[in-house]
Image (cartoon, rainbow, N blue to C red; front, side, top):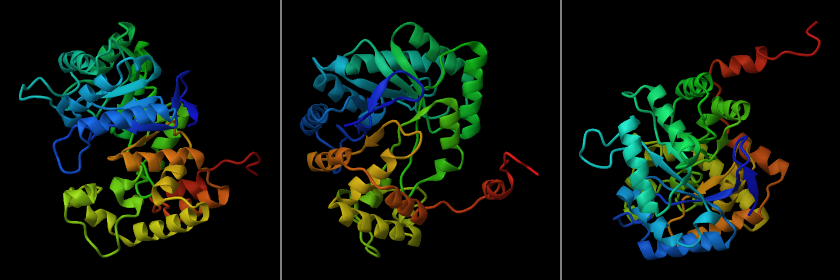
Length: 342
């Protein structure tokens, strides 16, 4: 396990983080509490120090599982959780209002059995609450010692830039980390977010590094998964980015062919190659593993021993390249300045 700075902060996080979204869920593809606890302990034993959850995961059950598993180990872990989504039928128990954030942070602290959260994310934007209100309460939580660092997830670029500007103008704590979907087959954030993260000193913690399981190699061309036990892609609605309709395209199968070539060269699995590619990308501080079973976790952890060559990175970059869009394609040819313009 390697360690990276979280953005421009002095906080060091392991380059592989443990994601706990399906820990404790009541579904065929969830991880039962007993297995979840064993996976948490195995991850820590492997040298990892960064664990990610959210209040909405399994309606609080994921946080409860973590609270129990981390007894006696809390001070060795960088613990991240999130706030935004509804946790009850109460009309105020949702969003990024001061009311909901204050209510939610105390509930998360209770479930996690801790008196502080290392990284607290705004899980998604809230169109009803002024961003000034949300940022002010996050700053208050840092000052009160309940939160150490603040993060952002799933904001549009303009919303993120507005939030950073608002924090700077008011002298409030600003986002240290951003959590966004990113993988070999979902590279949309490269159009602008990566440059923003690097310029503003925000660390990236990608979720969905295997594209909902597509990059694990378990799916076959032309064979549509139909059962929940066959993975996330089988149960996603048609319009969702991780649906079979959006994954079953020529470009993605070409990506898998190249992943297969690189995997064979290293004697590695598809998942390990996909994770290794992400670990080497600019701005990435820690890749969130979405392992469902102990076997999957063990496979993912071996990525820590794998480094791709520059040639392999270029090959994977090329086959998964984003389509040219304006104004990026225009600026690629005409937006550069040289030392000697004449």
